[in-house]
Amino acid sequence: MKWNGEVDWVRGVFIGVLLLLCCFSTAWGKRLPAHEYGTTVMDNYSSKNDLEPVVFRHWVHRSKHTCRLCHVDIGFAMEASETQVREKDNRAGRYCGVCHNGHEAFACEEKNVLGRTVENCSRCHTAIAIGQDDHVRDDFDDLAERLPEGRFGNRIDWAKASRQGLVNPKDFIEGVSFERTKMKHEEGIVNVDAKLTGLPDIVFSHKEHAVWNSCDLCHPEVFALKAGATKYSMQDIFAGKFCGTCHGNVAFPLKDCGRCHSKPVSQ
Image (cartoon, rainbow, N blue to C red; front, side, top):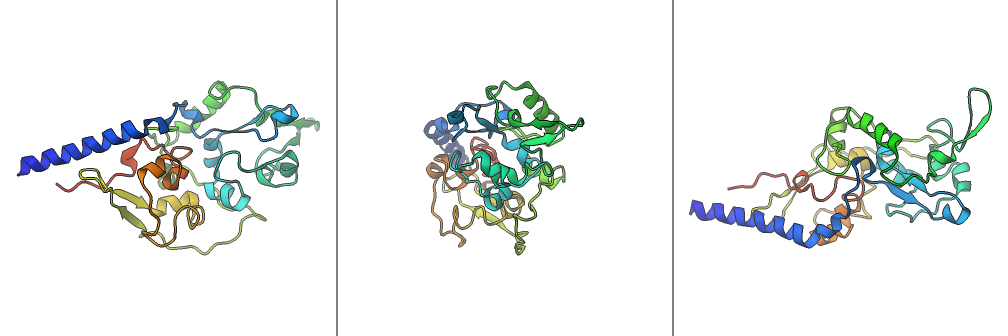
């Protein structure tokens, strides 16, 4: 009987992995170099005005700021190109201009040491193809050397880096953010049934997600507040819904199965 149980366990794991590989491999898409994972091209208006598009690299920004700060307080949509950002918005202190004001980060225009006005357009609007900018790669390598290594995506374990205090993302911008009631999430470990024999259950930590997202980035738009009220499947996640809203785009990709399916299997 023990042997049959072991066979069933191995068969279950094999079938589960095979299903994921066969059914959803196309969702993983073309692999980008580590320093370009999560990179987004913003071109709603640039090309129409004879400008190069903006190449936005999430790793640069998430090393300094939380996801919630940009996607809730500042108002960037979670879906690429949905936010209609214009130069006049930035210069008025909205969207990118909330931080790119010469204080929090470089501004559209600044004075150099000689007192001359310098335009910083090319720091965001660039003609260099994604993956071909050596300066970006070098800056990424410098950062990655100081942070724990991950297996996929940009190969940085951001959650571990946060736990170790190696990154401390800013979550409040004066005049834009507002004070929130701190919710207790220290005990917020949720076990999610994998619903497949032999496949480890999912261990979901509210605490680790709250560091970057707080509560309002996920609830109630992505997930209902009541536990178990949201029904979803791996097909949904691979289609970019629910967990797939972030995982596979900016957060570690879905091929890193063991990061979520991490509860030891009973034998």
